[in-house]
Length: 369
Image (tube, rainbow, N blue to C red; front, side, top):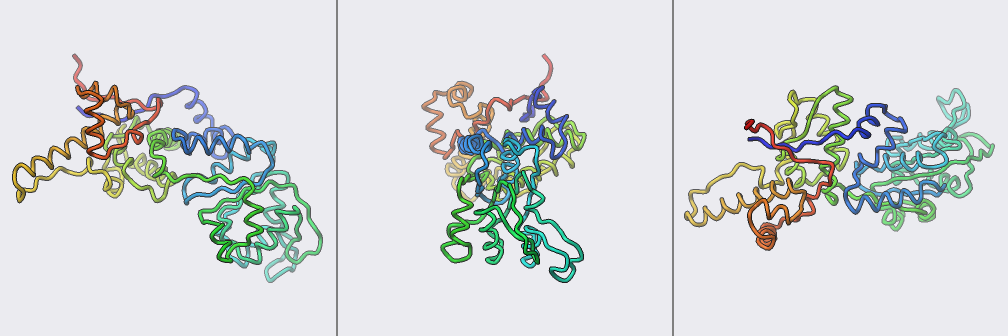
């Protein structure tokens, strides 16, 4: 008998995904699910998003790389009065310092070598809409001065120009650095930091909201099924267990990439552990092969084997019961007090297994009666 973690199709979600295309507002309306909202941390994030989205207030998104800041910026735009106007995204860290000013504010013909024609900058292109300045902490001090004027007055001049250009643009900035610390060290202007930090939203890393992982896995599989024309039905429980123990240095983006890679490689209907890099499972004791150390006294060796078994059993039991202690204890044939005692002994946190109602555990390969 083999067990898998599978998901049951939900009509409305599938309709939305099948009708969507990259960049489509209907797809972006589902981004809240893609970022993950099962955890209290992400519910708090989206509570802030709901409050500030309809306004024109400047927003500063903070958090590690890959946490979904750009997706949240898109949600803020799509749920504002500017939704039908341009959304211009600028990856500040990818632009050479010598070109940043020209990219943001444009230039006049002849402003510098190679400027053969007038070029509007990103702020002009975003007129009436939203500009998203990603990795804002990487811009040079000289550009910070000009950006401060834009944030304060909504006015600037093109490089090589002398005419003031007024704009009506909402500014959303994002950073994976501590701007307060950078400003204290003189690397980022304090006045610009305070102007950008009107409404801060911190997006927590995936390792701090592991209860979102199963939901994210489900949604990424759905997306891959549509884009890759696959029919993946779920994932092996060892995959989910490994994911729950992994640190996720690349956060949601890393998870999405791993699922896409696994879906491409998978010829069957279930994503198995061998479709994922070995490091994804190194943090999960229950996914490692059991070993017996014959150099130990038999009583000690037996205790170690029992400990490994108990941890693996708890892992699977709580995963299948979504972290609910009472039904888990009933299934195990012990009292809730006994189960809690086992959990404490093995350092198991039930919250990691609270996956929500969207995932179901199915047993596959059972013989028909």
